[in-house]
Image 1 (cartoon, rainbow, N blue to C red):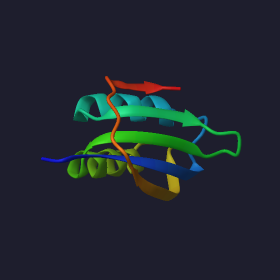
Image 2 (cartoon, rainbow, N blue to C red):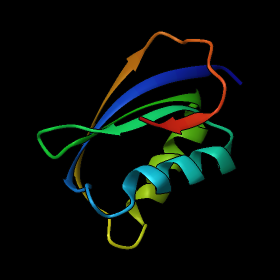
Image 3 (tube, rainbow, N blue to C red):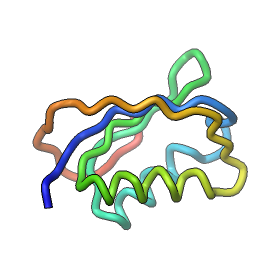
Image 4 (tube, rainbow, N blue to C red):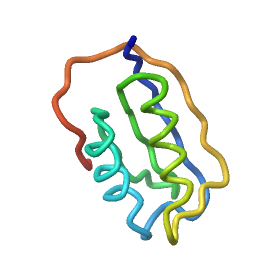
Length: 89
């Protein structure tokens, strides 16, 4: 299956609720590489790389986590990069 990379910007109740560490845990379990970080404006930005199905599953699982409320998720397909693992920035 073909790998893709997407940049996501999440809005809602996404900071101070374990979003980044949930993303890291789920991404590692699913086999997705990339990173996630908080932004100054209260959003969370994530770049994730894997198959389309893996990325869809990651976002779907983030939406069902306790305490996290994603009101909107903007996504943009971006070029692939060589990267190992998934980490919090």
